[in-house]
Image (cartoon, rainbow, N blue to C red; front, side, top):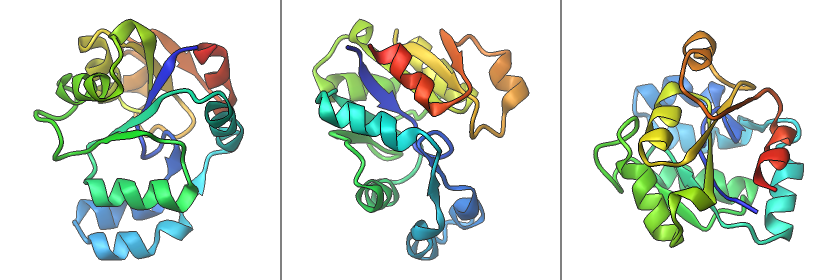
Length: 165
């Protein structure tokens, strides 16, 4: 089985309701409204399988660590490592954050697959030598994502299972 790197916002969790607060850096309000976010349909089953099979799993996000940690805790996500905005520079689309995740996971790029909803996720994964997956269920960049150089494209979270086996 492949180990996994996920983007967080609009890939694992629908955080659309938090976007205005995040853009305005009103973090305390964003933290308070995390219960208003939702996990995408089918994602819980994917995460249960990841948990059951002890598949190494990381989040690489351009969001700050406290925000990521609060969402991980709220949903009890099976995440072993987090690479946030401040953990590796430059941020996506540069590969530094992905390379940091590989280092933390102790794995070579060819043992990992990365899932994201934006072109910067695909570009960062590809530049790090990681198999990239364009996730279309939450993206706000559908046209750009379709034109990106992804390894795979999926429409539903449950399709993740076909790619990690």
